[in-house]
Every structure is written in structure tokens, then in C-alpha cells.
Length: 509
Image (cartoon, rainbow, N blue to C red; front, side, top):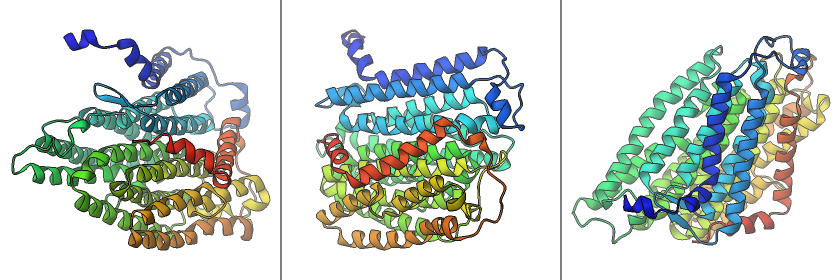
């Protein structure tokens, strides 16, 4: 009781302003969705698609309000980042520049995910209010994950994020694949959560605390079984978090879920969910790896190598564009895991590489999925890579943007993907991991094969179907997402110094 009275509630509210904005914004959208008047759709929606039910109430303002709440939370993160020079721990939460830059990354992905839902939700008759609420609450859960100084709060954040993600994956109930993806994601996610909980329990058995501050050599309990509990906790935690970030062999859910989920949700999964899980992974491993550097590094390195090669090799045989990008996501999870290996030897370099890679991948994959969504026809998503034939002639700007994103995913200059891999490999070499560096280079060369396939189809294969794509998705929000993503990929690739300085200032330990 005394600790509650001594708490500086104003300071706590100010430092947690992004989280409060997301929760309040989601709650207001939820209440407004219940009481929204039954107006018909606006004229522009009725004109552009005969498949839309004009008697569905227009809830576009809810989506706009959700985007506004996320934007204000992003600005709050930026203001806190500018003002925070040292970590500020308040109970179970730690507000430092690492969590703030991660928050900006995740909230930015949420804004893009809401923007992609603008036309898609109307066209597929999906509930706008529910979509907006789930996105905001899931982002709040992600914030709890990355700013947590206590494993119990981290687990609560994981569950808030995961439950929202399960519903988002299966929200298109008229689509069998969407329902199937939601069910698979839920069942396997529940198993992964159990492994995470077991890992946290073993960590507690080894240290006697759930606070990450207690994870030190002095904090390890003197019982003979403490080191054994620490090893078990690390193993169970790797299995649970490996599912969340799609590390092999815990990746099998990814292609099915990415294929079945609505495209805006898939883009958000590949960026925000993956980033939140990796940032939590990094925060925990930052205190666990020094306690068992050899074993922990070997486990993560083995998972990273398997993930890179399995993801890239499987992607070579894909003709479905969503499954191709899903296996690409798996491979990139392997590259990002290499940054954690570097972190065991050079912590600041490893975290810098991880943030660079997660930022780069988020922008690239959101842009790629946005182009794929824009090419949907008459309420149907574009699925086959062959459907891109002749795109370079019919829609040059879309073909150019998709080419930029694919080349960046392959790690070719002058894109941000190249710089991300360059810094990652340079830090691996600095840490003395030459074998992992060579494996990553070989894996990247393999990926060029399937990233170049859609580009060849767009520019060198004749048009098989002259039917123009549906203009329902062609709106200002999705065009802005594609434009700014392509611009960021090129500008950050050609002029990386400013972004690198920003990231380095965020990981001072």
C-alpha cells in the first residue's frame, strides 16, 4: 500500500503515454462500433463496386480514428525518445530508447495495416470496427512485450497480442482458408504459449525472480539444480519464441496462416508481430546469454542456419505469391536471429544489427503486400505469380515499386535491404563468426532466384488476361503506403548514415 502511495502516477502516465493512447483509442472505437448509427455506404463506395452491400453501415470514421490514435501514439514515442537519455524503470516496465524505437516500428506497421484495410474491408465485407479494435489492442500487447522488465508482464503482452492475432487471421469467415488459418494459428499458438510459460517457470526456479534485473551470476540461486533449470528455461523459451518469429523447425504454421489471412493482416503479421517477438527475444537473451554464452549461442546459431536455408529453399518452388512471401519471412527470421548471435559477443553491435534488419524488413514486406493487395480483382486476392504477367506494361509504377521491394528483400544495392544485410554480416565478422557469415551469403544468393522470378514475369511474360484489375482498392491510403515504403527503401539504402545514427543512439547500453 505504501509503495502505491509513493508512486509518481503522473510520471508513470507520461512514460506510458503511447500504451495509454492505444488502449483508450481501442476502447473508444469498441464503444463507438456498438452505438454507430446505421448509415449506408458513401457514394464513392457504391460507385466503385457492385459487390458491396450498400446497406452495411459506413464505419470508415472508426478506421480513421484508429489511424489517428496510432499516429498520436507514434508521436508520443518520438517525443519520449528525444527526451530519454537513460533507461527509466518503473516497476515491471522499463522505458528506454530501445523500447521506444521498437514501439515506433510496431506502431508504424499498425498505421500501415490500418491504411491497407481501407478499401479491403469494404470489398470483402469485413467488420471495420472489429478490425480496428483488434489492431490497436494487439499493438498495446506488443508494447507491453518490448517494454517489459518482468517476464510475467511480457507473457501477458504476448497473450494480448496473440489472441487478437488469432481473431484477425480468421476474421474473413466467408473464406475457408481464412477460417482454417485462424484455427491453425490458435492451436499451434496455444502450444507455443505453454512452452513459453514453462520456460518462464524454469527461469524463476533458477533465479528466484521474474524480473530481468535478477538474471545475473549473483542472482542465480545456489542450489545445484539452478544451472540445469536455466538451461531448461532457455530451451523452452527458444521453442515458444521460435514459433512467434517463425524459426525452423517451428515455422510450419507460417505459409498456411499467411496465405489464408486477409492481406492487410498478413502484412501486419510479417512486420509488427515478428518485430515485437524479436525485440522481446533480444531483451531476454541480453541477460540470459552472458550466463551461458557458449550453449546459448550455439542453439540460436543452429536455429538461424536451419531457418535461412529451409525458408529460401522452400520459396524456390512457390507459385503462390503469398506463400512465396511467407517463406521469405521465414528466411528473414533466420537472418535476424544472426544478430542475436552477435549480441552474445558484442551486445551493442548485435542489437543495432537487429533493429536495422527489423526496420528494413518491415518496410519492404509491407510495401510488397500492399502492391499484391492493390492488384486484386472483383473481391478476389491476387494469388498466382503468373497473374503478374505484363504488369510492367499495364501498370509501370506498380511494377517498379514491387521490383524495388523484391530487390531489397534479396539484399541487392542500392536498397535498404542491402544495407541491413551488410551491417549484419559486418558485425558477424567482427564477432568472429566467419562460418555463419558464409552460410548467410550462400543463403542470400539462393534467395535471388525466387525474388527475381516475379520481376521476370512482370516484364518479360506476355499478358494472359486483359481484364483490368478492380479499382476498388485503388485509394489514397494504399497508394501512400506503397509510395512511402518505396521511398524509404531507396533513401535509407542510398543514405544510411542518418538512420544508422538514430539506431545507434537507441541502443547505448
